[in-house]
Amino acid sequence: MKLIVQKYGGTSVKDTERIKAVAERVVSCAAKGNNVIVVVSAMAGETDKFVKFAGEITDNPNEREMDLLLSSGERVTSALMTMAIQELGYESMSFTGRQVGIITDSSHTKAMIDRIEADRIKAAIKENKIPVVAGFQGINELSDVTTLGRGGSDTTAVAIAAALKADLCEIYTDVDGVYTTDPRVVPEARKMDKISYDEMLEMASLGAKVLHGRSVEFAKKFNVPMVVRSSYNDSPGTLVTKEDGDMENIVVTGVAQDKNQARITIMRVPDRPGIAATLFESIAEANVNVDMIVQNISSDDKATDISFTVSTAEGPKALEVAQKVSDKLGAQGVNMNPEVAKVSIVGVGMQSHFGVAATMFETLSKAGVNIMMISTSEIKISCVVDMNQSELAVKELHKVFDLAKQ
Ligand code: ADP
Ligand code: ASP
Ligand code: MG
Image (cartoon, rainbow, N blue to C red; front, side, top):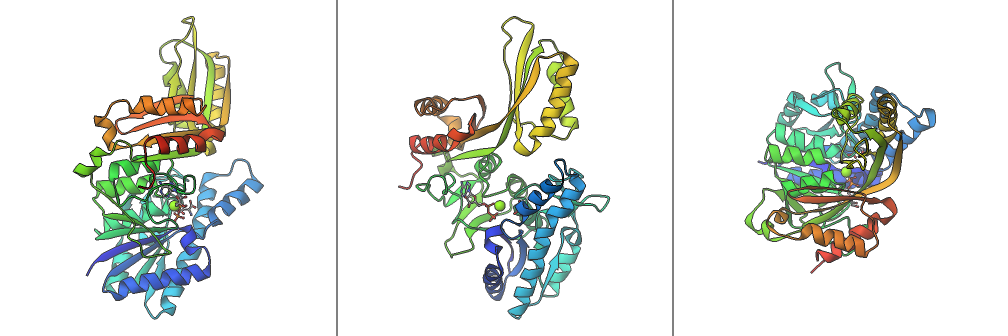
């Protein structure tokens, strides 16, 4: 008897018809003799609706209240899914993050899971009940509700699979698996049969929203076999797994874009030791994650520009902190460009091939795409570009690295 965690995303449970269809899928897996744990997202659009409501009330919503608000969408689906499974004659029981015992830190709206006290779901399985868990949420040590960051239900599923040593974690979504790039942007994108944890981790953290980055981190760390599949058909999907020999032969595996970026520049900061430390300590204290950083060489040895990127949502907060630091240090001023995107190429094979960066830059230049910032690691190269040119950049890179369907 196998233990399988199945996670269903927002479009897979977008209305009651879909919830009933998913319940059939769950029950058919259980009927084959498997123990199934279901993790659900909110119905498509619900979480966005809550964010919009908050924005209609305040420009600066309190993050603790935001988490309680956002977590409610997943509760609705978990109760409805449980009823749908019960209707098919199976025993089932819903669980909120708190009831599962998902304990997180206190970084509201982007909390990290510390541990899972899974006693109640274990007991439910023993009693032959199918547990249906509300994804995306946990509680902190004070028992306040926290959420795991947008797209975080994937992480709930993999964390539960790791904690219960499940045989498989299936992520059901609205595409057939992981593609070489977002198939909605490049229709020629090719579905991969498998992808390494490391490449998937990069793709996810660079904007391929098909999986939440933290879910892949968990899967890699605890060796959870993970499959991304469609909830609309029976095709086998994409296996996310350990790297194997074949994977090194492919130079670039995929292209990702993240439009959820803002660039902040502090102009003419005095060029002396300790300036970057002061700035980024203040940003970290405000609980904002900084992604890329570029510091220009000063032309006159007196002052320099420092630019960095953050997520769009954290832009205003980061700008406020940067403004204060700029005043304190006597810099010329601060500006924010929220119209930027990050375009990246990913591949483990890059480590052993030359000229990949040159090809990327040349391709962007030929397409008339201006590169504002660059960052690299062993298996990825990212460029910050104008948001309006991001999709063109993705299409051209997908073409030049020959990633389309064979
Ligand atoms: P769910 O609601 O099931 O969690 P998401 O909307 O979070 O689904 O993720 C699925 C979407 O991810 C797809 O519809 C697709 O547009 C997008 N996507 C982006 N990059 C990729 C990629 N490389 N492969 C597959 N899908 C991708
Ligand atoms: N409902 C949440 C979101 O829209 C979490 C998820 O779907 O994974 O971000
Ligand atoms: Mg998702």
